[in-house]
Image 1 (cartoon, rainbow, N blue to C red):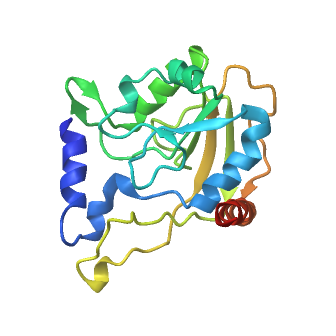
Image 2 (image 1 turned 120 degrees about the vertical axis):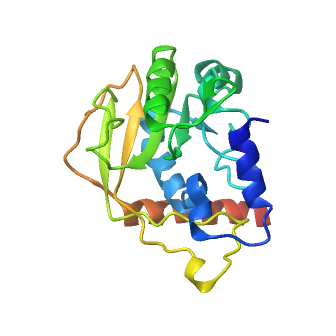
Length: 216
């Protein structure tokens, strides 16, 4: 296990936590993720792998954990093995971390990996901060669309606030969808923004349908 993954596990196993200790572990609301999957499925094909996840928050049955280190994986080959077309990621924004002489985090390195995987045939959808002033924010993506409304990311299930001051806030931040797909045939920079509320509503319908099927 690399040091980054070991550090995450140690934090999770603490009896209580400070808000800042959530770090890279803020989770995408499931309804929002499923709203995005539904919206882009017709253009990307089946979205079957969560690139940055763990056993308690994976949005899809197939996923890379911090222990796996996505940035050393051949996503294009894995998608072929699974039989799907695309992968999803809400990437970590922490400073670059190197483990076993390989980068594990760092948005510049994540974007570079996405570009390389695209050239090998992988399709990737990122839910990212709309941080256009950051050096890692690239114009080399095949598609970028901004989301209207701030997204309130969720605290992980293991998080136990040490004090009332450490209770999670849902203030969120401005976000965008960034897609890497060498076969992209649609508009690349739509002016119209995606609606956060519409995505959540659509995702909630899908999740309710899944729950009904499970109950039946």
